[in-house]
Length: 156
Image (tube, rainbow, N blue to C red; front, side, top):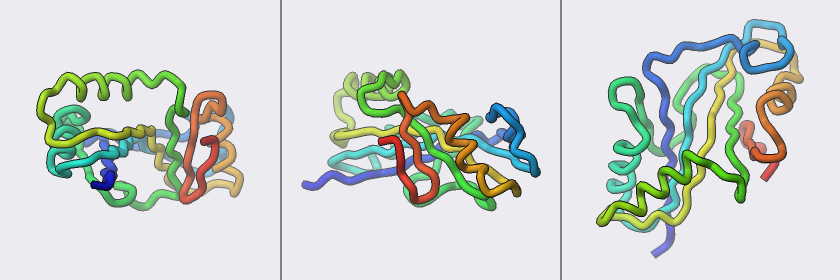
């Protein structure tokens, strides 16, 4: 049986947009704001419903967060989004905690073959054309992070 993938995006119900100046070393000008989510990709064999149940129980606070399974980005009207996460071989405490919890369970209904995590920053508003490069430079640490903007992938 081939491995399947399930993407999960978790967003805070009560989170509001913040000024991009909070994220960057220098103001980008314009009226840019952002919202942050968490993105996960489970590589698995077995029941998709079991993976969704595991993700709900492990990753989501039902009072303050919403979860979406599969599909593209969950927010609309953004200029671009930046996803960044730890490179392979770099200690990722959240990932290790999720994997340790999975290993403690006796009958999950699926075999977890891989897990990728990222912080997703949605950027809204108008700014100069070089703003993507500024986000990469100021948010991503190339020594430990890989990142994705749109369909471009770099730093792997």
